[in-house]
Each structure stands twice: as structure tokens, then as C-alpha cells.
Image (cartoon, rainbow, N blue to C red; front, side, top):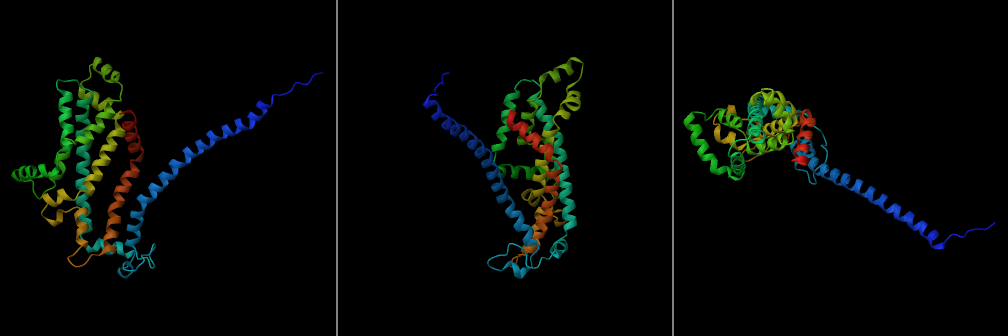
Length: 299
């Protein structure tokens, strides 16, 4: 009976092979953990201002001047929220903001999908050239437009009304048009072609076929438009003259006087202003993530 000898170099290589197999595993764990650590750190940085706003809203005026500042109120005072609501006509400002936000969101949800459909699914002469011009308007500075718009709205008798803040949303926004167009380009062309063969008109194709498939992108446009309208400060300040028509974004300035600032009441009111936007995002979170991810990956 013979005993075969095992080559020593092969035996010596076995532990090295094991070490080499462990290196990819370590790299895999590192690649999986590092993004999570970065995301957690970024979330912490973004949440710090909201935490500071909420805790400041619960503090009394003497505690605001303590150094170093307290991370949690020594004696939390939820009554600051009630005082903030009573300090300014909060209910009226809230209703004004809801009207402006709802009108703008409806206008954006109607106009931008229609315009984007014309640029993405319908072939007509000069389509790409007109689309390039529409996209170029993004780079036009706002101060260049505001004087002309103010003059037009003055002649129409719209100053000191909500119309100049709502009606422009029904004519589309270049960024929202681009976002919707990128989404519509990902839908199969055969869907529209088969509907045309069956005798469907373009409006029927858009309403019954394309729009249901584009719900995530429409939701993203509505959220963007609603948040922008809710936080808008400059345009209401320019077009509105009666304080009873001010939205909450301007109403927060009433907590600032010439010699004093009610920071605790200001932060309490700011917290209340943020809550509807947060609820809107949480309600449409599924559509928002789906619409943004599809447009980013495939667009």
C-alpha cells in the first residue's frame, strides 16, 4: 500500500485562500454599513433644526437666554402653542394658506401633465425647439419677470386678490413639465398607438390610459407645488395688501417687532406651520418615492 504525499506548496496555500475569501466578505460588510452610517448621520443633521424648533417652542422667555442653552426645556410649557395662535389671527392666515395651496396644487396637477403629454407623446413640427425654449425660461431671473407680471395683474384688477398667486399655476411650470415629460417617455409607445388604432382621441388616451399610469409623477408634481405654495413668502407680500389675506408664511413675521422677538411663540407657530406639510408628505410618500425614483433611474 502506497501513501501519496501531498505537495507542501498546495497545503501552504490553503490558509491564504481562506484569508483571500475573507477579504471580499469584509469589503461587502463595509460597503453595506458605510452608506447606512452616512444616511443616519445626514438624517441626524436634518432633524436637529426641527428638534431645536420644537424644544424652543416649549421654553419660557427667561430660559431662552440661558447659556449654555438647554437641550430640553427645564419646565415645558405647551401653552405657548395656544398663545401663538392667539398672538396673530392664526385661523384666518391658515385658511388663506389652504386656499392658496389647494388652488396651486390643482393648477399644477392639471396643467403640467397635459403640457408634458404634448411634448412627450405627440409629434408636431418644432416640438423639441419649443421644449428647449420652455426649459430655457428656468434660467430667467425672477426680478426680470416680477415688474411685468405686476403691471399685467394691476391692469387685470387682480392685485390684493389670490388670483395672481393661483392662476399662473394653471399655465405650467418648466421644472414640473420636465419631470412629467421624463416620466411619460418611459411608458411604452405601443399603448398610445394601439388606442389610436381603436379610434381613441388624444384627450381620451391621456385621460383614460396615460394619466392613470402617471399617478406617481403627478403626485410628485402636486407635492412640490403644494409645498412651494405653502411656504411662499415673496409673491404674497408683493401682490397682497390687505393683512387679512396674508398666508401663514407672512403671518409668522408678526412675531417680530422693532425691539423684540417672541422666539418661543415664533417657534411654536413655526412648528404648527410645518405639521401640514409633513402630513402631506407622509400621506403621499409611496407615490412620491416611486415617481422620483423612476424619473431618476430611467430618465
